[in-house]
Length: 179
Ligand code: FES
Image (cartoon, rainbow, N blue to C red; front, side, top):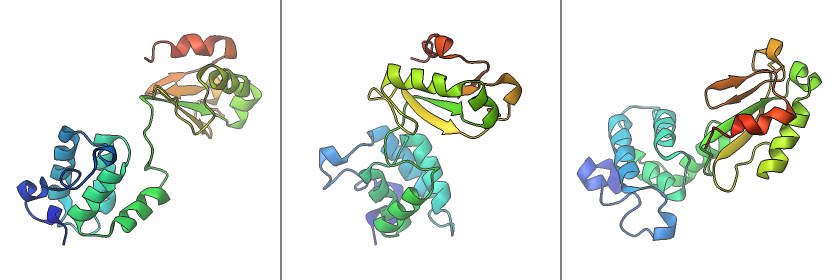
């Protein structure tokens, strides 16, 4: 049984601390504490793994190896099972994400109105393709199907902001405010 199955205090002696090399430890101390709280709240609830994973990702942003190990120990399941669930669902990420996600609509209306030129401009300026993250973790670029605002085509969403009638000429200016 993993040490995270006991009290929070006992759990704090594992989960990315003792016996873990620094290069494997991607969580900060504060994040680790918050993850331990999440595990403590859910570990006695059957079928709670997805809930724990969602909440843990909200804290850490993605699943570094020490987070997977911590959850496996805390929930008393094999690390390979946790890894399997994380890699199966697109909702979860094994790599760090950017601070801002750019969702570009590749639906028919946006395609006809020139979203491809917008995507190409972003790609050449920031050196990323769809599904990638900039090296400085400023942006993720995601292609999505119809954002439901076809009347504003071509459309992109950055964070919670919807931008309609985007053009290749205007898009870099729009992105400047997302630091
Ligand atoms: S096709 Fe782009 S919003 Fe509908």
